[in-house]
Length: 150
Image (cartoon, rainbow, N blue to C red):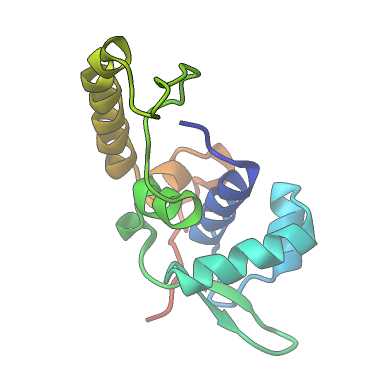
């Protein structure tokens, strides 16, 4: 399984929002600057995260983004599935037989790939945006509280 730069940027943006210590929305520009991400690219990612129900936006000069729900309820798995699609085991370069079906030897690996996929899903379900934000040293403050609007 590979995580694209787009998905990694989206995860980083969510962690940045989780670490916000203000009731004000965070602008794309602020998120991009804090995470050193390309602003134009981030705009599309944030729009996609909004469609997925992870963030909500506020329009206007003081507009920006909030988390849609608590960071502790947003799993890495849910974000990755939204931005990447289904979690699949690592790709392998074996060719199939002439009719496109896996050979017996290739099919013998299927349980291994399934176990890897299942383990990956368990790990990604266990971690949340909040658990990642809690491990970022500059986000650990006494007044730390994730901001989201319901």
